[in-house]
Length: 275
Length: 226
Image (cartoon, one colour):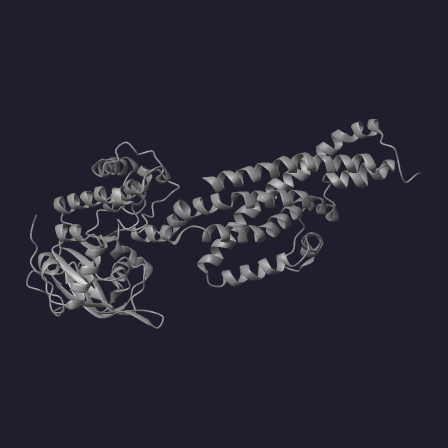
């Protein structure tokens, strides 16, 4: 496993010596009506880096993923993906709000796996995985099927190509959802509490699959999870959030064993007590 | 002539083929064509309103409110007798064409509401998954949202087909020779015997719509359990 260089949050002006970050948040502001969820948020994620966001619910972790996936609109600031502005497009030498076409172009680099799987119930497992490669990437059906079967085999579902999602267990559905996201060959993969809706005995299988993907690919990952062992295993960096702010961040060993802030200690204590 | 006539079976059987002929040629054809028009136009209306297409969306709203607030016979009169007299745009259309148009547009307005409910029944996560996969709006609708939406409301759509079917006798007011017109004005009027043919017409409607209604209820249960 390649160890990416440590990134520095907060120091976001100017390109880092190591090159462009894969993701950059710059003075990001997100409000839902009068409620401010994220304010003045700055951080970078390097290419290939895997970052876990932890913190109490309502601290803005999921909102960060949803902003990146353009499922929520940005209230203020800038988000950059692979050097391109996500919510703005260059026009002359200015940045103007992105239109739908531009958004679609940039978001192709990003894939997401949801807590509720969100598989297409009207399609077979294989169709779920091949639909976007065919319609969006313009692959031929044969090519997409071949790649789709390969991916489904990788997630352990080679016997289920023709099944419909409703015939699968939650764990199997989530594996299909992971294969579906990977089929788009994203540079960035967002994992939004992907095991939170699963029966306890199915969690380990999905997490092991994700560990395997983390070890064998260089996809940049942003992970929101309450599975602290998993977070520790796969991430290069952990960011602790509270009230839309980064409380602290650092390598998982440091954050999980010797955090600096009381807020982090209290949170970890509560999460570990729960189990 | 007595008010109460006894049932004349020979008279009934003699005219049954005429009734069935009119039933197939006009009643069924008007229902099928009207339903197809309603299904397509209603879907268009629903999508225009959902996507809030500028200009078109408010126009659709006006059409829907207007059509739903006026009775079918008035609409038939207007389209068949009124429309051809409009200077510049009016032209003559056959009674059957006018009938199919009116039934189709009338029910499209109800279908639009059914589709709307169906579209809203598709979970938000389905749209979000499409966004996450960068699937273009056209395919989101075509491949993900509509197949699920339509499946959910298939029984309601079917019930409106049955309802339209039972309203085809209104075509009488513009002179379409559908089954009830044939029974009342042609056969009944000629022989001054109405009981047999009108009863038969009623039974033919019943024979067609009751099994259809039962089938829709079964479909509803099956989809509900799926």
